[in-house]
Image (cartoon, rainbow, N blue to C red; front, side, top):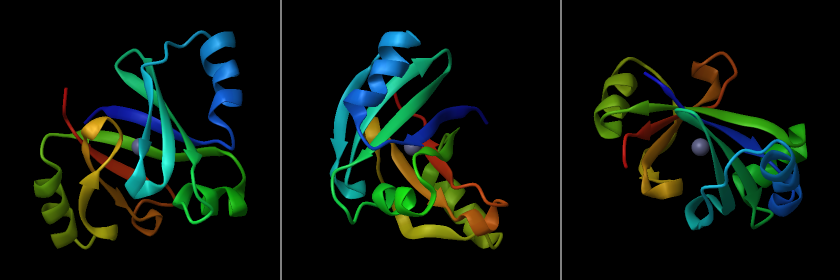
Length: 132
Ligand code: ZN
């Protein structure tokens, strides 16, 4: 199971890209809006993985609520799975707690679902279906 990406909550995508893209020099794969999560997303490939910058587009966005409590910073870790529906069913059976009751479509069109931090020792963990 590989790390697909690290999700980072940011207040302003363009301001944050000045560091990650322009200063640090990571390539920028693109910016898109994920309406489901009420965020704008920038993906920056780092070898086999990526850094995902997440800017809320609405005060009700889960990312906005996260930053109200904890401020900007690492929000989640995403791992790649072959079949998100199958992993969801398997882990649910094992007693793992999820956020939401079915996978949704995340950035880049991947099927995703989040595991609740109560089941992972405090880390919001995203299962992200392999997709190219
Ligand atoms: Zn993510």
